[in-house]
Length: 132
Image 1: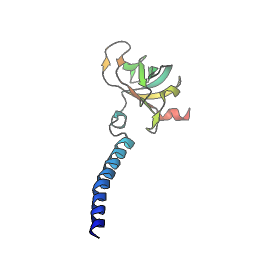
Image 2: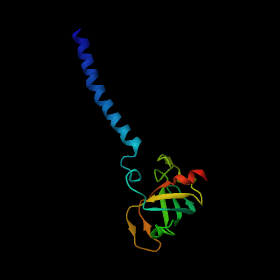
Image 3: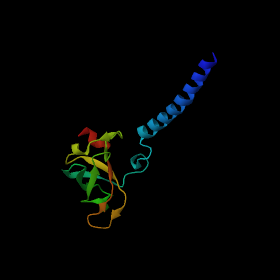
């Protein structure tokens, strides 16, 4: 009987911390908690004017909507891994973007140039683009 209790105690000490760790990781990765797209309004909203692809990035030409003119004619280099979300916040492949798609963009630091150039942009297909 004492051996069974020791086995149960050992099992509990090994399994319970692992379950807590897995639960914590799933919770963080599933809600996009650290992603700026879930925390901040977009820096720019506009229409895709061109799409050029390579192995790790998709260069997206952009015409800004009214109110976001600072980013007009910018080319955003979106990473093929995590650079684009669909309107529901799920990962989307930027290789599937097309001219005419409406997107929202979040940027890091930008160089003062014309057009502006920004590091590490993240984008989301705008909800109204779903109907196109």
